[in-house]
Image (cartoon, rainbow, N blue to C red):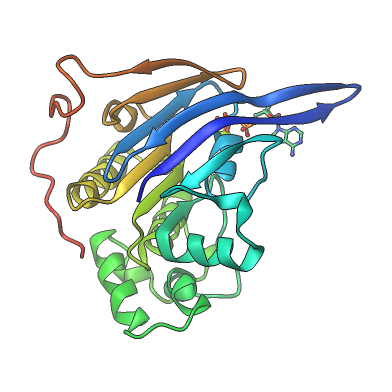
Length: 243
Ligand SMILES: Nc1ncnc2c1ncn2[C@@H]1O[C@H](COP(=O)(O)OP(=O)(O)OP(=O)(O)O)[C@@H](O)[C@H]1O
Ligand SMILES: [Mg+2]
């Protein structure tokens, strides 16, 4: 799937003034691409991602998924689209406190009628993410990094075509963050597209391109020397271990 962001603008009110949290931003996430989004705190990354997945409506501009305007769909179709095609890892804590870690990860599978075994799938993801021992723990019993990884398993449970992740490695130590990067790289090698907002230098470097935001605007897009398919800077030995 190709996601096109076209001239998106979103303004918020602060006191007496309005300001553009996102101002006239356009770019495309081509099938199987890995785009990273960097920029200082408050530069508009989360606002942009929330529009890209159709959770927040823009003041102007369009988001096209394979040519179809997300905001021309009715609410039900838009949420079906998200549930089927997009794995979203929101910033901050987002798990339901009354479900176990495993059931949190399984939840999106059951929002639609599907065949297959969500428990088995969630367990495979938990194993890949080093969470196997925490299946039956509740969110209040997990560390920040563990919560992140459960949110990641939840984002991957429906085998999305695109993963949109908002600071997926915050709360993680270097080793765990590197593990997430390897996981993303493996999925990307299988054709899953990524749009990742991050302050993590290792993760952002992986992006082709790296988009930089400043005060709501895209100020810079860094392409690697020698074109978009350079493997330079990418981790070695990233295998596809999820299907
Ligand atoms: N609902 C809202 N109402 C008013 N202002 C908002 C709202 N949401 C975000 N903002 C403001 O819009 C700007 C962009 O916020 P956003 O969360 O998109 O930044 P960010 O780049 O994701 O920051 P961080 O790196 O800290 O997550 C900030 O100045 C923020 O205070
Ligand atoms: Mg943010």
